Length: 204
Ligand SMILES: [Zn+2]
Image (cartoon, rainbow, N blue to C red; front, side):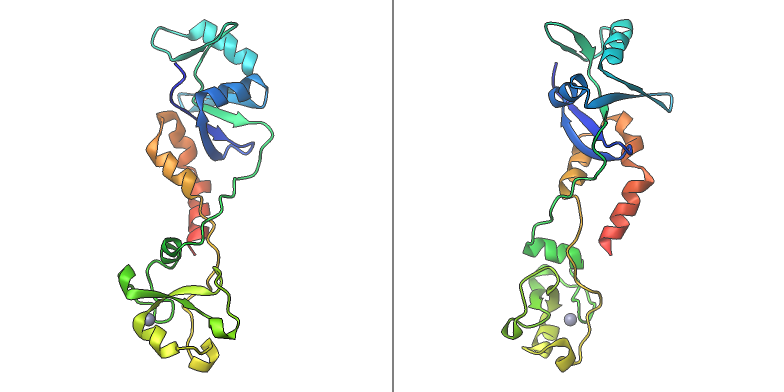
């Protein structure tokens, strides 16, 4: 029984990834990770040997276990990485869809919300003036603002952006996966204040 997933926490007990049971057990075996067990709201950690003993003592028929030639252990559902303390920085792809997402389908000049098909992508500093096609220079613009601005700079057109465009810092992969496969014991780590803070920051 090697199916299912394991939630991976970094040294600061922040959820950073989801891995296969096989990968989780191998990290544990190599001493790169410990198992986290939640019991009645309290968390204990186990190294490989401790987890093996614990499994031996407590495994029942219903428990999912990993069997190898030399050992049989319970499947860990949460592991704690012992060396990794950063959050993975998934690059957000520079796509049309993600620009609309970043700008919340709002024209960045008049601030009104539009259907995707009623919005253009506008170079803030026009291409003809050396403006680049980058996160910082591309914004959503409604057709009328786009026409009003034309090939002029913000200053020349006397227009303003409702917010400064920048590259977003989402973690789309992780957020999507967390919604897909969840174990009850993960809740604590997925609902922590840390995640809320991170998302608010990124949505600015
Ligand atoms: Zn507009």
